Length: 542
Image (cartoon, rainbow, N blue to C red):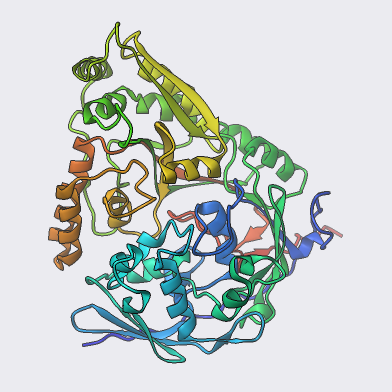
């Protein structure tokens, strides 16, 4: 029997706004009507199909809404979809859409979703690095690979307000996939006129609560209330200002000065100090996020799994989380964080329980087997992101690898965060740090990254037919326990191959003004501005 679901409830009611102060670099909107957010890095693009990273998601998710969206706790809830049915075999989802408009007054129809999905998966669309997230749609992989035309994609408009998606395999977790920004509708009537300039502030039309007003790259991004949004009258803030600043010390100082309301991190290792400076502001919660090191398998000697495993063995995860970060992070010996839906127990490195001295001995042996030694030093460069904890972790890893033997000579280089991600996608690096925050709560969202057919997001260009086959088999398995077993086998293969070198499981480290309501801790660390309000100031004694 097909299933039907109820529509999303209304957005939070508006609250009385409190006082605040504007920073000198911000537009002169009264601070009471303005939410000021630090996002940690500068987006390359605000095109939902060309953007990447949580910093871009913070902005784009305030401007667009897909078939599904998030509630305040980042759980998938209906967005543009009013209701839907699912076929008996789980392969065909049919959505009835709400009748809504783009910000320019043009009706949003099922054709905007068809255009969006086809554009995302068209190999001619430059920069659609996350297209593989939607490979669950029928023929998506072949369309994206140029083997089929875009009209063969399993997405069609039955009428203006009825959309049908046909899948390759059953995807009970599809609502979580469809709330990702790669599944947002795209206004064909704007893109066809303005081309790549369609996201310029003067051209961009949106269907979400806020629309882009100004973007000073590296300084701030400003969005204003979209009056065409059906819940516009209930929004507490008329304007959102985003600061793409990676210096979290600076953002703590700005919070102390009353210039920002929230930031997506605080200085690493300074939880207690931050609590003293900003009482009630730090917010810590477990995340579906793994920080890891990746080696470029297209370059020698990193095409040799013994070299990659040697690096993994020498990484002192316990020391890093306990003595450097001191923020609740957990050492990672597998890729998938614990607690993912339907995945009660993941895989681990087979040597995870060895003491460090034995790990270093094994690492030295592996490198010697690979041809390195006193007369053939192992020298390489480790590139790391400039944001967050990464600059503090990098010299520790450098020391860890140097502990293997005197002839292991790592050099470290700091790279601006977005620039390093660009290098990772183009395979223009040797060894680098990176991370993955789950787009939806399922182990497959981590493991698909290492599929040889994933594309740019397979940063190390790892390829193993046995691994790919297990992922394919898991996608067709309807029994949850059997599917989890197949995924665990796949994860064990990638760990045995040292395809990636997991380092730690992250926690959220946000700072949020206690006077801001509507922020809820969640494992995806997604917090949409439309749910937030500024509490009324407490009455003074008279």
